Image (cartoon, rainbow, N blue to C red; front, side):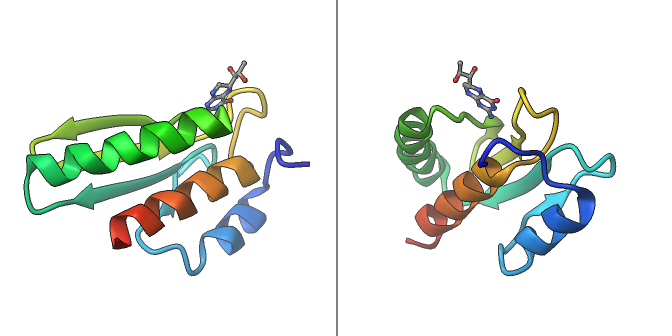
Length: 98
Ligand SMILES: C[C@H](O)[C@H](O)[C@H]1CNC2=NC(N)=NC(=O)C2=N1
């Protein structure tokens, strides 16, 4: 099940090969900071992610300052990290990579 909470080891294993993402100290969320060339690039990324997130019905907790976007992902119902978070993190990395 995609909404099944991943334990610390499973979450860490899922993050290997996912550039830039780290598990929070409490194991309940994953984080990445994306840095762009300028604000327009950062906002374009957020727009693409927002549309994908809405389709998934899975939404990032994020903030944007100028050309950086800080992202936290978790699954509220599960109270931690699930495959949905890993899927959204992968999509973000793909959008970031071009
Ligand atoms: C009802 C709706 O499916 C839920 O509230 C969705 C919406 N977006 C969500 N986004 C995230 N990140 N975690 C969730 O658990 C979540 N739940």
